[in-house]
Length: 190
Picture 1: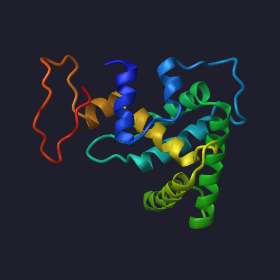
Picture 2: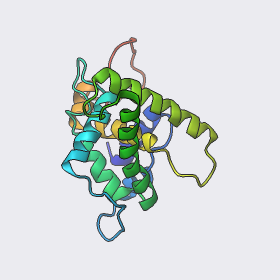
Picture 3: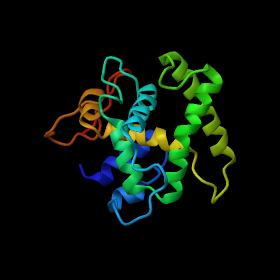
């Protein structure tokens, strides 16, 4: 499977296009481009992103987003593939989540319990849906939308996500266009 097919499948999972998808398909251009203030992310920021991603895709019977090192993936994608405008929105989003956590829970996001993190991100996700519903052409992307998209892309294209969360056969046999699916079964990565 090539990158274009993988991204198209992830985009189908997301229900739309992935922000930065064109850059991902055409090849990211690192260096030379102006970076938003705060990039590349510090180890603290990457840990923060891992926690956000783990709240979106928690560890259950399969490893979560933290095991797939989604925070590091986000750092690479934001630095190498996002426009300066999306980089700025993304970086500012880290502080917005922290501020919202302080306001809602009276403590940092990292100090919050998993239940508090989930409740907070659910509120922010509702804000994202309202923003996207009323978004006009030319308005910037919502920071949490960028984070969710990168979480899903990073997780399901990682070895952990493709082989443990999805069913995977490294060298598939013949092509079968229609395979019976029973509700509750894992989707196929290959």
